[in-house]
Image (cartoon, rainbow, N blue to C red):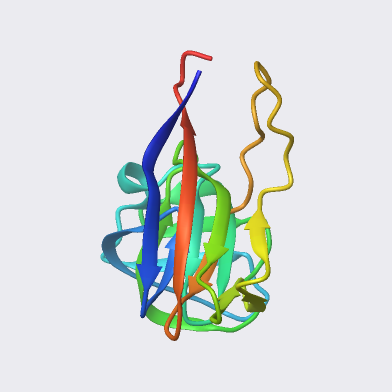
Length: 161
């Protein structure tokens, strides 16, 4: 059974990942388009997990972790568009709540993964909501509500399903 988590909540005057990322130890660097991420003072083996997501809120991107080679090296499913150098490690666990919908306040505009949405639009995960069926985990998104207010609803599933 699905249960709501902090639902709904608002994002206002900030750029964040949805679901929220957690800052982990150290910093990370990666060349543009490359999949291998190098950490400095990181604990990838103990603090991150395969299937989770690294977050770059500056460039509105999230990338899935497909393997962890050591505390200071991991591999992504696809590379970030821009090079990252010495940036904080922001991570979303693969078991985190997923996006159900994001609704923008009237007469405001918000960026979701770099795409402009207005109050006439809502962002949804695109999965059906049929009773008894489990929604698929969708990719986290970056929400830039620096000049707007957005309402977010997340759904979380227990591991027992």
